[in-house]
Image (cartoon, rainbow, N blue to C red; front, side, top):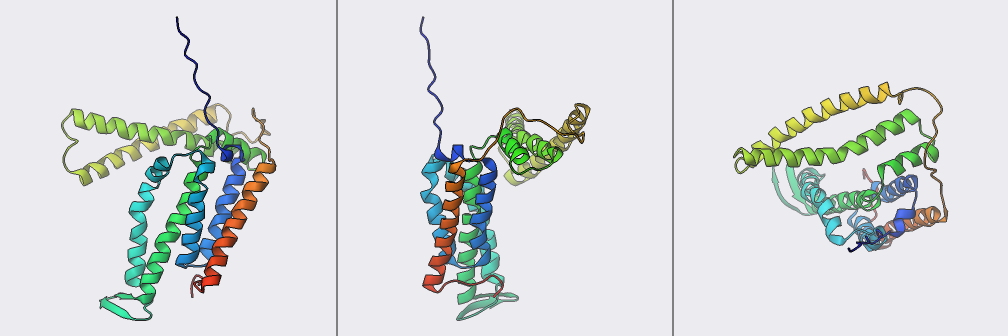
Length: 261
């Protein structure tokens, strides 16, 4: 008879940071990118965020996989800025309302990097965050209403079901011989079915939660305490330093450009 002993799950440094602090970090990191629209601050923030990947406990391949949708759709915003931004400098070509110039190229690169720099922190900070821990933190630390917190928790718990539903529908279509042609048409038809599933599941879940008294306006208790620690302060201070370095790099290179100018 042999006994198999499972190795304990590896914990990362950020696992000990309160989820509310993670939300604050996302806001802090977004401020420099929303103040200035330039490539230098966005590139600096993106590079510093990538250096923080070891603190999350996520393999780099996992980060890249989760960034894939952003990498696919971010160029759309960059192309629109490339074609329709206010022209300036040398004009390389124009057609109808679209004009490509020095300023539009610079803005397109800045927008592309800024989208990546805004999306990456959310992936790094919340990829390993337990939805229940997030709900505990929102209720006990952020002091948000329990009805709102429980709704957020229920929604977060159902996100994984969408992935399972999509996988099941894909296998079912392949079993019927419908999964190898018309990729675009298949995507929209499956997305509509998934939307129907989501509405039905949400209705049933809301009814069940109301029947169990989750919608009552009463003072609630929470099974697991959620508190702040020195690690939260260190994480928040690090995010402030990262944002300051990004802005300082833009100012030092003369690339700083306030949004709207």
